[in-house]
Image (tube, rainbow, N blue to C red; front, side):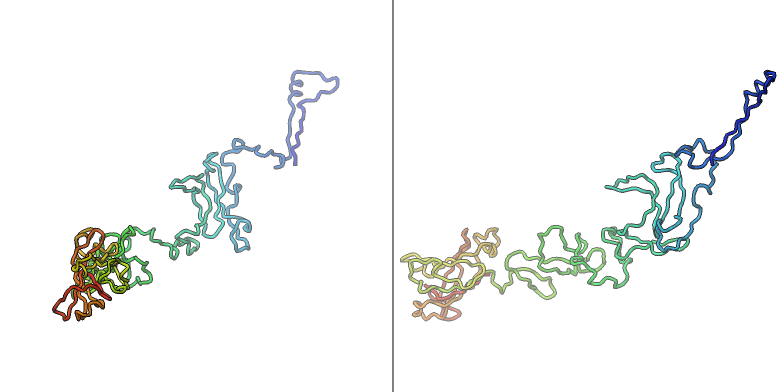
Length: 392
């Protein structure tokens, strides 16, 4: 309906009526009557502002829905609810304009109203408005139960990781008896990175041969003896062996195992050959010995039984205390069979000895003799068919 305005004059003059001052004033003062009402369509958008509204003129019933009415749908989404869980709060986004009302709702199960913000590199930014949000799927907690008055937070299964644990957070008192089994221990998990009982290192240059438990040392603050210690090889071709009963195992060169050896066969007769180099011999099998050569000087019979042996690189330091092996003399056990030109000596075999120290070319000399029994040595053996050199 529209508004109707009726204007009635205060005095109406008739013909031949005497005009007076009072009548003139009355005629100039009409009466205005307004009837009807204004429809919403007749009020311009944004025409009514705060100054037009009297303080406390709008009560709660005029401000929005004051109760919830359940829908027939079982899915709690705004689209299939005829009314949301509406609350009214003051303070618009960034509080501008100040005191403005907003609508907030928690329209999903287990959703929460929380101050809206974003964290980037430890810095929080946002418009600080309260919004409805749910827990992220990566959260380590979950809402387990709800009733009319409360809800319950629980930690998700497998949600607590190593990175979340403080150092020394779990001790003996926090663990039940026999709760940790071998399949729960990470490989290497028994090694500590300090001196409390482990042997692990941050570098990758450590290769222990065996881990032993030293009964004379305590493993950290556990109160139990038997600290884990590593026994590591210090050189080539070392083996692990015991010096005595109830003593620690050691890496080293076993006294019954040679540090280097070679089984050598002669390539034909070489007793009187003028050229006696490595081609005169075949090394059938060896470890640490790479070459053999007979020492020969024309007319000098004493050199007939002398041979020069060359070590493989890296083996020259295994027979003494010098850094490069020069000047060290190996202990040798040398046996063999004589060549055919020694048959007249009726020698039953060859016995050899080391007669020189290792030189800068990794070479040293040996000399061979024949013997007829275990206690007596004969003359020098000029040549051999085969020989076994064992160095200790």
